[in-house]
Length: 47
Image 1 (cartoon, rainbow, N blue to C red):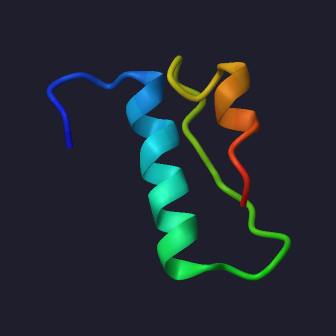
Image 2 (tube, rainbow, N blue to C red; image 1 turned 180 degrees about the horizontal axis):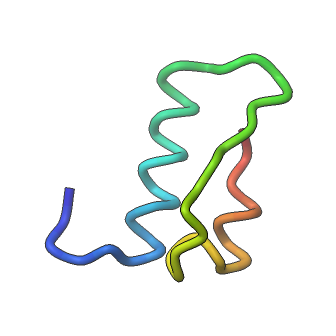
């Protein structure tokens, strides 16, 4: 959690979640397409 919805927060949260839960290959992450999700780094987060 953070006071701002920065792209770094979103990417970090996704990285922690995938490392912790270890989802199977083929995971699809749905977003509301907000500005923090529309950056190149979000698409590059391994999952």
